[in-house]
Amino acid sequence: MLTANEKILLYGELGSGKTLFIKGLAAGFGMLNYNEVSSPSFVLIKEYHIKTVILYHVDLYRIADNDEYFYKDIDELIRSDDLVAIEWAEKLKETAFPHIKIHLEYLNETSRLITITQLH
Image 1 (tube, one colour):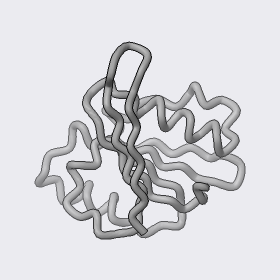
Image 2: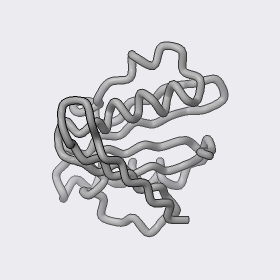
Image 3: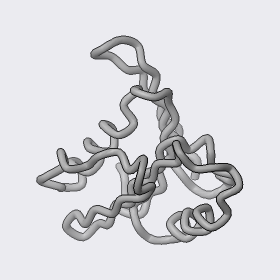
Image 4: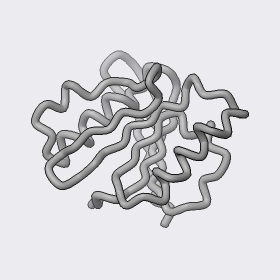
């Protein structure tokens, strides 16, 4: 069972369903308007207040490896007590913190293979 302070790292090709997975995560925590969850590709981080939970949705797709300023913000989120879901997590420099790794693989238009590994 997920807790409100989990760090979730999402891996998968473009179109594999990472943002859709986060919509489901938001719905699971009680967000009634979960269809408002969208990819933060251009704003990089979106914040959703869901009942007693704050969900930070991070998208690293457009981030350069040398963007130290942005990675400091990510470090702060990882150390927070909030729920954090990070798309394109392979771009993180460090993952030696407790997290759940979710890999989504596109099989066809309606099917995905989802592999979940808990690293606590």
